[in-house]
Length: 391
Image (cartoon, rainbow, N blue to C red):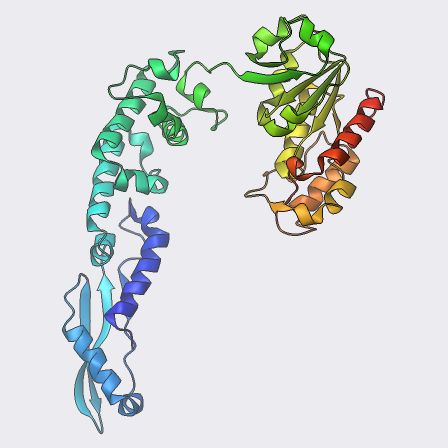
Protein backbone atom coordinates (compact mmCIF):
# COMPACT_ATOMS: atom_id res chain seq x y z
CA UNK A 1 0.00 0.00 0.00
CA UNK A 2 1.71 3.18 -1.24
CA UNK A 3 1.14 6.32 0.79
CA UNK A 4 1.46 9.81 -0.75
CA UNK A 5 4.99 10.01 0.68
CA UNK A 6 5.90 6.78 -1.13
CA UNK A 7 4.55 8.10 -4.40
CA UNK A 8 6.50 11.30 -3.87
CA UNK A 9 9.72 9.30 -3.57
CA UNK A 10 8.95 7.51 -6.82
CA UNK A 11 8.21 10.82 -8.49
CA UNK A 12 11.42 12.36 -7.22
CA UNK A 13 13.51 9.52 -8.62
CA UNK A 14 11.69 9.65 -11.95
CA UNK A 15 11.93 13.42 -12.18
CA UNK A 16 15.64 13.49 -11.32
CA UNK A 17 16.48 10.92 -13.99
CA UNK A 18 14.03 11.90 -16.76
CA UNK A 19 13.24 15.62 -16.52
CA UNK A 20 15.81 16.50 -19.22
CA UNK A 21 14.10 14.10 -21.63
CA UNK A 22 10.71 15.58 -20.77
CA UNK A 23 11.64 19.16 -21.70
CA UNK A 24 10.42 18.72 -25.26
CA UNK A 25 7.98 15.87 -24.75
CA UNK A 26 6.41 14.43 -27.88
CA UNK A 27 2.74 13.56 -28.01
CA UNK A 28 3.59 9.95 -28.87
CA UNK A 29 5.97 9.42 -25.96
CA UNK A 30 5.22 5.91 -24.66
CA UNK A 31 5.91 6.89 -21.06
CA UNK A 32 2.75 9.02 -20.73
CA UNK A 33 0.38 9.08 -19.07
CA UNK A 34 2.31 7.66 -16.14
CA UNK A 35 0.24 5.53 -13.79
CA UNK A 36 1.34 4.36 -10.34
CA UNK A 37 -0.64 1.48 -8.80
CA UNK A 38 -1.22 2.16 -5.11
CA UNK A 39 -1.13 -1.47 -3.98
CA UNK A 40 -4.75 -2.29 -3.05
CA UNK A 41 -4.62 -5.20 -0.58
CA UNK A 42 -6.75 -8.33 -0.78
CA UNK A 43 -9.41 -8.94 1.90
CA UNK A 44 -7.32 -11.33 3.96
CA UNK A 45 -4.38 -8.94 3.90
CA UNK A 46 -6.67 -6.06 4.89
CA UNK A 47 -8.12 -8.05 7.80
CA UNK A 48 -4.60 -8.70 9.08
CA UNK A 49 -3.75 -4.98 9.13
CA UNK A 50 -6.97 -3.03 9.50
CA UNK A 51 -5.38 -0.03 11.21
CA UNK A 52 -2.78 0.31 8.46
CA UNK A 53 -5.43 0.06 5.74
CA UNK A 54 -7.60 2.71 7.43
CA UNK A 55 -4.58 5.04 7.73
CA UNK A 56 -3.73 4.43 4.05
CA UNK A 57 -7.30 5.26 2.93
CA UNK A 58 -7.41 8.40 5.12
CA UNK A 59 -4.08 9.59 3.71
CA UNK A 60 -5.47 9.47 0.18
CA UNK A 61 -8.81 10.96 1.19
CA UNK A 62 -6.90 13.99 2.45
CA UNK A 63 -4.63 14.19 -0.57
CA UNK A 64 -4.90 17.36 -2.69
CA UNK A 65 -1.92 17.13 -5.04
CA UNK A 66 -1.75 17.23 -8.81
CA UNK A 67 -2.61 14.25 -10.99
CA UNK A 68 -5.74 12.14 -11.15
CA UNK A 69 -6.53 9.75 -8.30
CA UNK A 70 -8.69 6.76 -9.29
CA UNK A 71 -10.86 5.03 -6.68
CA UNK A 72 -12.46 1.66 -6.98
CA UNK A 73 -14.89 -0.50 -5.03
CA UNK A 74 -14.12 -3.87 -3.51
CA UNK A 75 -17.01 -6.16 -2.41
CA UNK A 76 -15.57 -8.29 0.33
CA UNK A 77 -17.33 -11.14 2.16
CA UNK A 78 -16.35 -9.98 5.66
CA UNK A 79 -15.57 -6.28 5.31
CA UNK A 80 -18.38 -5.49 2.87
CA UNK A 81 -18.10 -2.91 0.12
CA UNK A 82 -15.07 -0.66 0.46
CA UNK A 83 -14.03 2.32 -1.64
CA UNK A 84 -10.25 2.23 -2.01
CA UNK A 85 -7.60 4.28 -3.87
CA UNK A 86 -6.38 2.20 -6.81
CA UNK A 87 -3.93 4.28 -8.81
CA UNK A 88 -2.73 7.79 -9.48
CA UNK A 89 -2.18 9.07 -13.00
CA UNK A 90 -0.01 11.91 -14.27
CA UNK A 91 -0.70 13.24 -17.75
CA UNK A 92 2.21 15.69 -18.06
CA UNK A 93 5.61 16.39 -16.46
CA UNK A 94 4.42 19.64 -14.96
CA UNK A 95 2.08 17.73 -12.64
CA UNK A 96 5.06 15.90 -11.23
CA UNK A 97 7.13 19.07 -11.01
CA UNK A 98 4.30 20.79 -9.16
CA UNK A 99 3.91 18.03 -6.57
CA UNK A 100 7.68 18.11 -5.98
CA UNK A 101 7.76 21.89 -5.55
CA UNK A 102 9.61 22.27 -8.87
CA UNK A 103 6.83 24.01 -10.81
CA UNK A 104 8.60 27.38 -11.03
CA UNK A 105 11.82 25.76 -12.28
CA UNK A 106 9.91 23.65 -14.77
CA UNK A 107 7.91 26.59 -16.13
CA UNK A 108 11.03 28.74 -16.42
CA UNK A 109 12.94 25.99 -18.24
CA UNK A 110 10.06 25.41 -20.67
CA UNK A 111 9.68 29.13 -21.37
CA UNK A 112 13.38 29.63 -22.00
CA UNK A 113 13.58 26.49 -24.10
CA UNK A 114 10.82 27.90 -26.29
CA UNK A 115 12.65 31.24 -26.57
CA UNK A 116 15.87 29.59 -27.72
CA UNK A 117 14.15 27.27 -30.18
CA UNK A 118 12.15 30.16 -31.62
CA UNK A 119 15.36 32.15 -32.11
CA UNK A 120 17.43 29.17 -33.32
CA UNK A 121 15.28 26.27 -34.59
CA UNK A 122 18.41 24.08 -34.85
CA UNK A 123 18.35 23.84 -31.04
CA UNK A 124 15.07 21.94 -31.01
CA UNK A 125 15.46 18.69 -29.13
CA UNK A 126 19.01 19.54 -28.02
CA UNK A 127 18.46 21.56 -24.85
CA UNK A 128 17.53 18.87 -22.36
CA UNK A 129 21.11 18.51 -21.10
CA UNK A 130 21.09 22.25 -20.35
CA UNK A 131 18.03 22.02 -18.10
CA UNK A 132 19.79 23.59 -15.11
CA UNK A 133 20.86 26.52 -17.28
CA UNK A 134 17.30 27.06 -18.45
CA UNK A 135 15.76 26.54 -15.02
CA UNK A 136 18.25 28.21 -12.71
CA UNK A 137 20.12 31.00 -14.48
CA UNK A 138 19.17 34.46 -13.19
CA UNK A 139 17.42 36.49 -15.86
CA UNK A 140 20.50 38.68 -16.42
CA UNK A 141 22.70 35.64 -17.05
CA UNK A 142 20.23 34.02 -19.42
CA UNK A 143 19.79 37.23 -21.40
CA UNK A 144 23.56 37.61 -21.55
CA UNK A 145 23.91 34.04 -22.83
CA UNK A 146 21.44 34.71 -25.64
CA UNK A 147 23.22 37.95 -26.50
CA UNK A 148 26.60 36.22 -26.68
CA UNK A 149 25.24 33.44 -28.90
CA UNK A 150 23.54 36.00 -31.13
CA UNK A 151 26.69 38.10 -31.55
CA UNK A 152 28.94 35.11 -32.20
CA UNK A 153 26.54 33.73 -34.78
CA UNK A 154 26.48 37.04 -36.63
CA UNK A 155 30.28 37.48 -36.43
CA UNK A 156 31.66 33.96 -37.02
CA UNK A 157 35.23 35.12 -37.83
CA UNK A 158 35.71 38.23 -35.69
CA UNK A 159 39.24 37.23 -34.53
CA UNK A 160 38.71 39.28 -31.37
CA UNK A 161 39.94 38.42 -27.90
CA UNK A 162 37.26 37.45 -25.39
CA UNK A 163 37.48 40.73 -23.53
CA UNK A 164 36.82 42.63 -26.78
CA UNK A 165 33.34 41.20 -27.40
CA UNK A 166 30.88 44.14 -27.55
CA UNK A 167 28.13 42.45 -25.54
CA UNK A 168 26.49 44.44 -22.74
CA UNK A 169 27.43 43.24 -19.27
CA UNK A 170 29.90 40.64 -20.55
CA UNK A 171 33.22 40.08 -18.82
CA UNK A 172 35.87 37.43 -19.35
CA UNK A 173 35.27 35.83 -15.94
CA UNK A 174 31.59 35.27 -16.83
CA UNK A 175 32.32 33.55 -20.12
CA UNK A 176 35.40 31.63 -18.95
CA UNK A 177 33.26 29.39 -16.73
CA UNK A 178 30.66 28.98 -19.49
CA UNK A 179 32.91 28.14 -22.43
CA UNK A 180 31.59 24.59 -22.76
CA UNK A 181 27.96 25.74 -22.76
CA UNK A 182 28.55 28.54 -25.28
CA UNK A 183 30.63 26.40 -27.64
CA UNK A 184 28.23 23.43 -27.67
CA UNK A 185 25.16 25.59 -28.24
CA UNK A 186 26.95 27.54 -30.95
CA UNK A 187 27.99 24.29 -32.65
CA UNK A 188 24.33 23.30 -32.90
CA UNK A 189 23.30 26.77 -34.09
CA UNK A 190 25.95 27.11 -36.80
CA UNK A 191 26.44 23.45 -37.72
CA UNK A 192 30.13 23.72 -36.89
CA UNK A 193 32.09 20.65 -37.95
CA UNK A 194 35.39 19.96 -36.25
CA UNK A 195 36.73 19.76 -32.73
CA UNK A 196 33.68 20.40 -30.56
CA UNK A 197 35.98 21.21 -27.65
CA UNK A 198 37.90 23.98 -29.42
CA UNK A 199 36.11 27.02 -28.02
CA UNK A 200 38.12 29.62 -29.92
CA UNK A 201 37.76 27.92 -33.30
CA UNK A 202 34.02 27.45 -32.83
CA UNK A 203 33.50 31.07 -31.81
CA UNK A 204 35.89 32.57 -34.35
CA UNK A 205 37.85 34.27 -31.58
CA UNK A 206 41.54 34.94 -31.24
CA UNK A 207 43.27 32.40 -29.05
CA UNK A 208 45.35 33.92 -26.22
CA UNK A 209 49.04 33.17 -26.72
CA UNK A 210 50.01 30.01 -24.87
CA UNK A 211 52.58 30.81 -22.21
CA UNK A 212 55.41 28.35 -21.70
CA UNK A 213 57.03 28.19 -18.26
CA UNK A 214 60.73 27.37 -18.66
CA UNK A 215 63.71 27.15 -16.31
CA UNK A 216 67.26 27.24 -17.58
CA UNK A 217 69.28 24.83 -15.46
CA UNK A 218 72.71 25.83 -16.76
CA UNK A 219 74.53 29.10 -15.91
CA UNK A 220 75.79 29.33 -19.51
CA UNK A 221 72.22 29.22 -20.83
CA UNK A 222 71.07 31.78 -18.29
CA UNK A 223 73.86 34.12 -19.37
CA UNK A 224 72.39 34.13 -22.91
CA UNK A 225 69.19 35.77 -21.57
CA UNK A 226 70.72 38.26 -19.16
CA UNK A 227 71.00 35.81 -16.26
CA UNK A 228 67.26 35.06 -16.07
CA UNK A 229 66.60 31.46 -15.09
CA UNK A 230 62.79 31.28 -14.93
CA UNK A 231 60.75 32.54 -17.88
CA UNK A 232 57.08 32.55 -18.91
CA UNK A 233 56.82 33.49 -22.59
CA UNK A 234 54.89 32.55 -25.70
CA UNK A 235 56.20 29.83 -28.00
CA UNK A 236 56.80 32.39 -30.77
CA UNK A 237 58.96 34.56 -28.52
CA UNK A 238 60.77 31.57 -27.09
CA UNK A 239 61.62 30.29 -30.55
CA UNK A 240 63.57 33.49 -31.17
CA UNK A 241 65.87 33.03 -28.18
CA UNK A 242 69.41 32.00 -29.03
CA UNK A 243 69.92 29.57 -26.16
CA UNK A 244 70.53 26.19 -27.87
CA UNK A 245 70.22 23.77 -24.90
CA UNK A 246 71.58 20.28 -25.51
CA UNK A 247 68.71 18.70 -23.55
CA UNK A 248 65.09 19.51 -22.71
CA UNK A 249 63.28 18.12 -19.69
CA UNK A 250 59.47 18.24 -19.48
CA UNK A 251 57.89 17.78 -16.03
CA UNK A 252 54.16 17.90 -15.40
CA UNK A 253 54.10 19.39 -11.91
CA UNK A 254 55.13 23.01 -11.33
CA UNK A 255 56.63 22.33 -7.91
CA UNK A 256 58.71 19.51 -9.36
CA UNK A 257 60.09 21.86 -11.99
CA UNK A 258 60.92 24.51 -9.41
CA UNK A 259 62.80 21.93 -7.31
CA UNK A 260 65.18 20.97 -10.12
CA UNK A 261 68.86 21.70 -9.50
CA UNK A 262 71.30 22.68 -12.22
CA UNK A 263 71.95 20.22 -15.05
CA UNK A 264 74.50 20.98 -17.77
CA UNK A 265 72.96 22.18 -21.02
CA UNK A 266 69.40 21.60 -19.80
CA UNK A 267 66.19 23.62 -20.17
CA UNK A 268 63.14 22.42 -18.22
CA UNK A 269 59.46 23.03 -19.02
CA UNK A 270 56.77 22.79 -16.33
CA UNK A 271 53.02 22.31 -16.23
CA UNK A 272 52.34 22.17 -19.96
CA UNK A 273 49.69 19.45 -19.72
CA UNK A 274 48.21 18.76 -23.15
CA UNK A 275 49.79 22.01 -24.38
CA UNK A 276 53.03 20.08 -24.86
CA UNK A 277 52.51 20.38 -28.63
CA UNK A 278 53.64 24.00 -28.39
CA UNK A 279 57.22 22.75 -28.04
CA UNK A 280 57.15 21.66 -31.69
CA UNK A 281 57.71 25.31 -32.67
CA UNK A 282 61.05 25.53 -30.86
CA UNK A 283 63.83 24.91 -33.41
CA UNK A 284 66.54 24.29 -30.79
CA UNK A 285 64.97 21.25 -29.10
CA UNK A 286 67.14 18.14 -29.36
CA UNK A 287 67.37 15.43 -26.70
CA UNK A 288 64.06 15.49 -24.83
CA UNK A 289 62.92 13.77 -21.61
CA UNK A 290 59.36 13.59 -20.29
CA UNK A 291 58.48 12.91 -16.64
CA UNK A 292 54.74 13.00 -15.93
CA UNK A 293 52.19 11.57 -13.56
CA UNK A 294 51.64 7.83 -13.83
CA UNK A 295 48.01 7.85 -14.83
CA UNK A 296 46.18 7.54 -18.13
CA UNK A 297 46.37 11.27 -18.85
CA UNK A 298 50.11 11.32 -18.13
CA UNK A 299 50.65 8.66 -20.80
CA UNK A 300 48.28 10.47 -23.19
CA UNK A 301 50.39 13.62 -22.85
CA UNK A 302 53.52 11.55 -23.48
CA UNK A 303 51.97 10.12 -26.65
CA UNK A 304 50.99 13.60 -27.79
CA UNK A 305 54.52 14.84 -27.11
CA UNK A 306 55.94 12.12 -29.38
CA UNK A 307 53.68 13.27 -32.19
CA UNK A 308 55.74 16.48 -32.43
CA UNK A 309 58.96 15.31 -30.74
CA UNK A 310 59.42 11.70 -31.92
CA UNK A 311 62.57 11.01 -29.90
CA UNK A 312 61.20 12.05 -26.50
CA UNK A 313 62.10 9.58 -23.73
CA UNK A 314 60.03 8.93 -20.62
CA UNK A 315 61.50 8.61 -17.14
CA UNK A 316 59.97 7.27 -13.92
CA UNK A 317 56.89 6.11 -15.82
CA UNK A 318 57.55 2.37 -15.79
CA UNK A 319 55.76 -0.52 -14.08
CA UNK A 320 58.46 -1.01 -11.45
CA UNK A 321 58.23 2.62 -10.35
CA UNK A 322 54.45 2.39 -10.12
CA UNK A 323 54.27 -0.88 -8.19
CA UNK A 324 57.08 0.01 -5.79
CA UNK A 325 55.15 3.10 -4.66
CA UNK A 326 51.81 1.40 -4.02
CA UNK A 327 51.37 3.14 -0.65
CA UNK A 328 51.52 6.54 -2.40
CA UNK A 329 48.81 5.85 -4.99
CA UNK A 330 45.81 8.13 -5.36
CA UNK A 331 42.86 7.87 -7.75
CA UNK A 332 42.39 9.47 -11.14
CA UNK A 333 39.03 11.26 -11.27
CA UNK A 334 38.34 10.24 -14.86
CA UNK A 335 40.51 8.24 -17.22
CA UNK A 336 41.58 9.23 -20.71
CA UNK A 337 39.09 7.91 -23.23
CA UNK A 338 41.47 6.19 -25.67
CA UNK A 339 41.78 2.42 -25.41
CA UNK A 340 45.24 2.57 -26.98
CA UNK A 341 47.81 5.32 -27.54
CA UNK A 342 49.74 4.82 -30.78
CA UNK A 343 53.04 6.50 -29.93
CA UNK A 344 53.92 4.73 -26.69
CA UNK A 345 56.71 2.19 -26.48
CA UNK A 346 55.71 -1.43 -25.84
CA UNK A 347 56.54 -1.10 -22.14
CA UNK A 348 54.67 2.18 -21.77
CA UNK A 349 51.67 0.80 -23.66
CA UNK A 350 51.57 -2.19 -21.32
CA UNK A 351 51.39 0.09 -18.27
CA UNK A 352 48.75 2.27 -19.94
CA UNK A 353 46.54 -0.71 -20.78
CA UNK A 354 46.88 -2.06 -17.23
CA UNK A 355 45.80 1.30 -15.83
CA UNK A 356 42.85 1.43 -18.25
CA UNK A 357 41.79 -2.11 -17.35
CA UNK A 358 42.16 -1.40 -13.61
CA UNK A 359 44.61 -4.29 -13.29
CA UNK A 360 46.04 -2.92 -10.05
CA UNK A 361 42.89 -1.24 -8.76
CA UNK A 362 40.30 1.25 -9.93
CA UNK A 363 41.71 4.41 -11.57
CA UNK A 364 45.16 4.02 -10.02
CA UNK A 365 47.33 7.13 -10.12
CA UNK A 366 50.87 7.92 -8.94
CA UNK A 367 51.54 11.66 -8.97
CA UNK A 368 55.14 12.56 -9.66
CA UNK A 369 55.43 14.82 -6.63
CA UNK A 370 54.76 11.88 -4.32
CA UNK A 371 58.02 10.18 -5.22
CA UNK A 372 61.01 10.51 -2.90
CA UNK A 373 62.99 13.44 -4.25
CA UNK A 374 66.38 11.82 -3.68
CA UNK A 375 65.33 8.67 -5.55
CA UNK A 376 63.71 10.70 -8.33
CA UNK A 377 66.77 12.91 -8.75
CA UNK A 378 69.03 9.87 -8.94
CA UNK A 379 66.82 8.35 -11.65
CA UNK A 380 66.80 11.66 -13.50
CA UNK A 381 70.61 11.86 -13.49
CA UNK A 382 70.77 8.28 -14.74
CA UNK A 383 68.37 9.11 -17.60
CA UNK A 384 70.37 12.19 -18.51
CA UNK A 385 73.47 10.03 -19.00
CA UNK A 386 71.69 7.69 -21.42
CA UNK A 387 72.34 8.35 -25.12
CA UNK A 388 69.84 10.57 -26.89
CA UNK A 389 67.37 8.64 -29.04
CA UNK A 390 67.49 5.56 -26.79
CA UNK A 391 63.80 5.08 -25.86
